[in-house]
Image 1 (cartoon, rainbow, N blue to C red):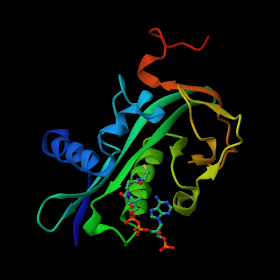
Image 2 (cartoon, protein in one colour; image 1 turned 90 degrees about the vertical axis):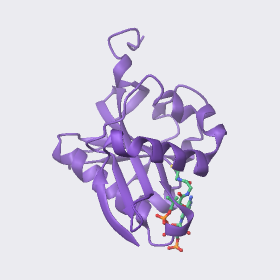
Image 3 (cartoon, rainbow, N blue to C red; image 1 turned 180 degrees about the vertical axis):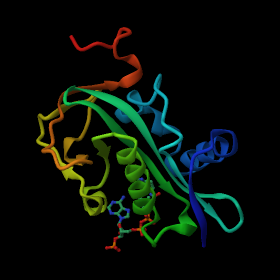
Image 4 (spheres, rainbow, N blue to C red; image 1 turned 30 degrees about the horizontal axis):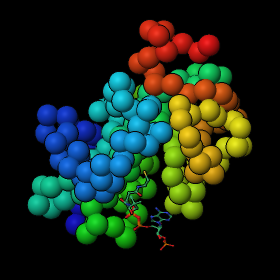
Length: 174
Ligand SMILES: CC(C)(COP(=O)(O)OP(=O)(O)OC[C@H]1O[C@@H](n2cnc3c(N)ncnc32)[C@H](O)[C@@H]1OP(=O)(O)O)[C@@H](O)C(=O)NCCC(=O)NCCS
């Protein structure tokens, strides 16, 4: 049973989060294109959400990363979402994402991008992009790419995506 869902406190949670990611995704995880948007970038602990089980261990997590899209500006890149096997079945992953995105909206973020299963994440309002709408820094199955507007505006993200940290320091758009 889940005791509570909190913002990430890196000093207390980072080690357990990495262990959960290793258990869930294995070493191949770092080869994925999504990882190119995370390496040399920093997630936003105040927006990340961690579910704590009754035993105090981490039951689930989602992290949010600042990225910049060629047209449309800043966006939150969501993931990875992981739930410990014994806690699956109650849509905890969706609860974590919902709370993280609500915190992002309150902090002024206007949109989010995720790579995942449309059947699962559409419950949060994520919608698939057109095949040529976004360009990732590597091969990407575009049928798994979705965006969510955190305002009422129409989705405005088009073009290349880069980690926000690189913008203006060697990572400018050509
Ligand atoms: C994806 C994950 C977070 C979902 O856990 P959860 O929130 O407990 O979700 P549930 O097990 O309650 O599943 C809810 C529904 O989503 C479906 N679902 C779960 N994972 C899915 C996936 N990867 N693709 C499509 N559908 C999925 C379930 O079948 C279920 O459907 P139902 O209600 O029709 O039975 C968890 O399975 C996990 O950690 N998986 C490994 C990591 C991963 O694939 N992360 C997502 C990509 S970043």
